[in-house]
Length: 481
Image: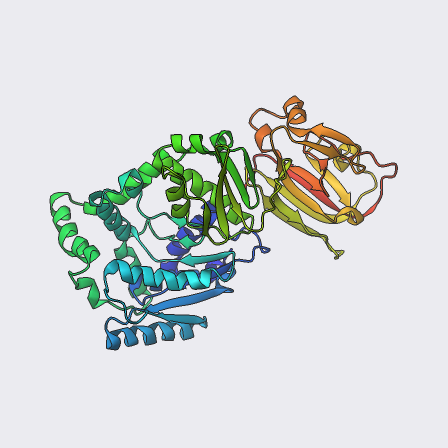
C-alpha cells in the first residue's frame, strides 16, 4: 500500500496503525474501489498528525480533501486557524473546503457547535456514496467520552465510547494512540500545530472533565487515570460483539439494499448487541457500494412501543409487515431475489495481457482471478468441469458474471443451458466440503444461472476444449491477503 522508503521514521508507526485500521475494516482492498476521502482538520496536533499520515498513503491521498470548520466564536483566532490550515493544504498540495457556523444561533453550547460541524461534514459526505471522513480522536478523547456517558446514564453502549468506524463513513483510526505520542512525532518532524485556547474554557463540559476531573482521577489512580476507561471500552466490545457466524440465524434475507429479520428476535437482543448487529449489517451494505443511514435512527425506530416506519436517512427506509422488519434502500426493488445475495460483479476484459487479482470474500477466504492464455493440455478438473476449486471461462463467456451466496432453500437453474432447477444449499450439504467451509462457499452466476460452485457444482461439459485467452478462478476457502 505504501513504500516505507518515503515515510519519515517518526511517522512509520502511525502509518502502520492506519494500515491495520484499513485492513480491519476491509477498506481500499483493491484499486477498483472508488472511495472519496475527507479529513477533518482543526489545526490542532491530533488532526495535523492524521492529515500528514493520510497523505503518505497513495490510495488515500489521490482523493483526499481537507474539511475545516470555522466556528466563528472568536473571529480573530478563528481566522488565524483557517489561514493556518489553508497553508498546510497548500504545503501538501491538497484541496481544502471551509465551512462556517450558521449565523443567528441562540446558543453556542458544545453540543450545538458539534452538530453544526457534523452537518457541514455530512453535506459533502452525502454527495458521494462511498465517502469516508477521517477524524483525529485519540485515547484521551475516548476516555473522556466514556466518562461523560457514564454520568449521563447512556447504558452499556455508552461505555463502548466512540466507534472506530461508524455508519460506514466516520473513521477514527487513532483511538488507541495517546496525545503525547502524537505531539512528540510532530515535534520531531518540526511540523507546527495550534493550541486552541478555548480548550481551557470551563463553560464546556469536556474541558471541565479534561482539565479538572481527569487530573484528580490521575492523582488517585496512577499511572493511567481515566485512560483505563479506553481499555475497558476495548474489552467490552470484545465481550458484546456477537460471533459473525450466528448472525445468519437472525436474518430472513440479506442482499444489496435489503435486510429482512423478525422484529421479535431483534428486540430480544440487548441494546449493545442490537447496535453491533446493525453496525455489521450496514457495513456489509457499504461494501456493496451503498451509502448507509445513521444506525441510531433505525435503533430508535425499532425499539419504540410502536415502531416508527418511513425514511431513516441516505435514501434508506424501514417498513414492518407481519412481524418482519424490512430495512431497504430506495434502489432496491419491491420483489426480493430469494436466490442470490450478490457481492461482486465481474467485469469483461477487453485486453489480452496477463492479469492477476485477489478478491477477498465477505464471509472469508478469497478468489484469485488470473487472465491468461488457456493451455490445451489442461484436464477436466483444472478446467472446472469436475467438482474442484478452480474453473476457466473463455473470453467470450465473461459477460454478466456475478459472485454471490445462495439463500437457504434457494432453487436456481444451473449450467450454461439453465434447464434444471437445483437446491444449492442441499447440494452444498451433500458435498465433500468440510462443515466449516459449507456456509461460506461462493457461487458464480451468469444471468440468474448458477455456473459453478467450488467443489460442488462443476462447469457444464463442453464438446470442445477451447484454447485462447480465458479467465481462471481459483477459490481459497481459508487464505487471506
